[in-house]
Image (tube, rainbow, N blue to C red; front, side, top):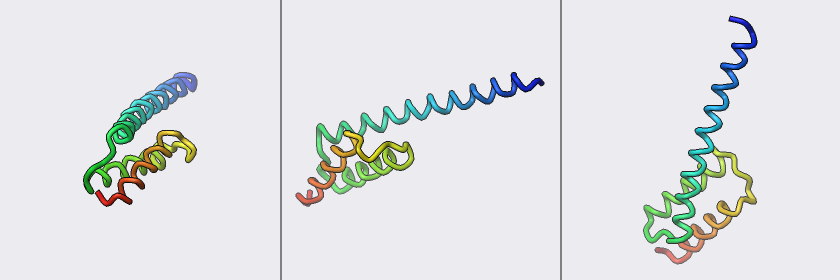
Length: 84
């Protein structure tokens, strides 16, 4: 197998992985937006939102100034203060 074909295959695999991450990022973002529109009302939901935010920030490498991340963290803090 020549070098060009090997590089093309590798690049195709990298592109597939990037596409999957982008799709996954969209799912996580929509889940966080759901909590922004309807804040958590139980300890379980707060824990789920916290894990989504951690996943969004750390695993999906979103910047700390991302609007969805900031809004989600504010909703989490507000619901924690209320003691729901």
